[in-house]
Length: 194
Image (cartoon, rainbow, N blue to C red; front, top):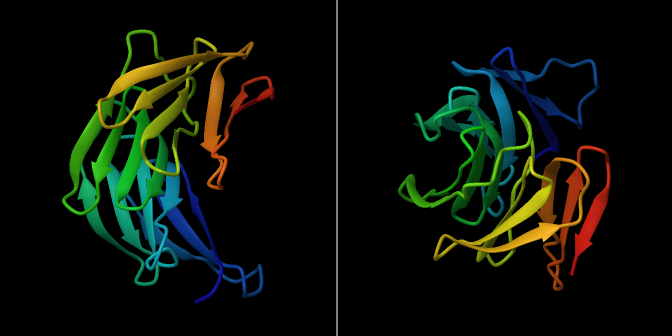
């Protein structure tokens, strides 16, 4: 397979660009019924053909980009628009402006966890939350300038990390051996948590 770039838009389109072709070639176009706000691809065997999109209507859609078709939908996963999607193994992690994070088991398309805290507020209409490489923990930035870390199995908050001076927009765990966490706030300040 080729190398693809996938883009999602507020015009409800998802486009798949083949980077091995010339830049002026037309992308493959897929249409959703709601604005696309977040995208990720599956890892492993299907990583070159299956993507997940989070939408303004709070729903999640799974796409086969080779065929250009939607293969599954999860309607009303959240009560507000989805701001982040991450796929890791058989787990899909989503975050939403409803101030919750949800884990979905892709094998049955059922919610396997719902994470929330009274003080956690989704920081923006977009962002990036992150599963730890071992899928034991979830990290998410908040509008209150903190990074929240939950134990996924117990759904218990285990840490509130304080280092930022503005809303924390993105978190990411290093998939390598050390599994360090990095977070970035609205002002561009990065924090490395070891």
